[in-house]
Image (cartoon, rainbow, N blue to C red; front, side, top):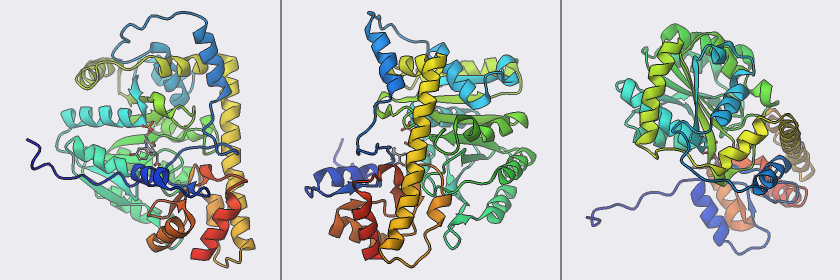
Length: 396
Ligand code: PLP
Ligand code: TYF
């Protein structure tokens, strides 16, 4: 049965981790995978999470099956982060939220459900996008195309081409959008551009799937959800995949959510019943621990404030590393203008380094970046930044 099984290619990002782990050079730096490290280079355990877990440890908690859609307070909290606490849509029962196995799990459940109800649609992802978007929607049975997005010559958005492309799509086609902190480029549309994107999507009858894996890493929790609220306000049937992997530093707990905006309560009830079936035939119901911790933080004012301030700290630290990198490249004699790094948002910078330069960084300096030139700014710190800037200067 296995004789014809071909060797699959490694995930271009997670595969880098394996290479990095096998590297014995003590000065190695991993700027590949999108993970936030603190100034000491450690994966943080947030105080808000520690307090919630200490609370939990005080009592014995039985582990029955959760409902298929997950912990009700978790879903409510995740939905409020997207739509606001007093959302009319939520009050009207028109917004559904399902606890999911990370942002990836939310995308997968959404993709499977979409394939069931909209089998002839094509899916469109940004050029470039997170690698797994294509793989995941192809696995769900869709053809996946790219819409124009990044303009390498300006290090910015090719907005005119993006909008023109969306305008050619047939009704029902599915458009995956990064609601904030675009992965891999760090380039987001302005809010005025988002308004035009949303209006085009509505006018053409397209189905938006907003991926929000970095809420809080752009300008703040509320600010970063403005795009979701825009689609809600325009009454567009919308899918949203949220991830708390980064914002809670709970990567291994698989905490995410799928939210679906419907036209009426009656429609939402029917959708709910079908998505529950999709979940049931995938993994039945989600796990308890990570969801319980996140729910405690989202639903307790003090813990929420603690979390929000820790998130702000992460965001500010990344920003300061952007400035430091630009400054130190100059100090190392780099004459090209790297100021675009300051305008990019979230954890990543599309540095403009070529694949050959990335390979030299890896081979000669033990500095790991993605072949596309994407570097994870959230992995820079005061201890490694001098070596990184020097190495980049030397390969430019
Ligand atoms: N979507 C994007 C754009 C991402 O960068 C990530 C990163 O991991 C995910 C989804 C998946 O999130 P999770 O790790 O919670 O599955
Ligand atoms: O883009 C990143 O680095 C993160 C982590 O298959 C990641 O989103 C990368 C690849 C992958 C899953 C997660």
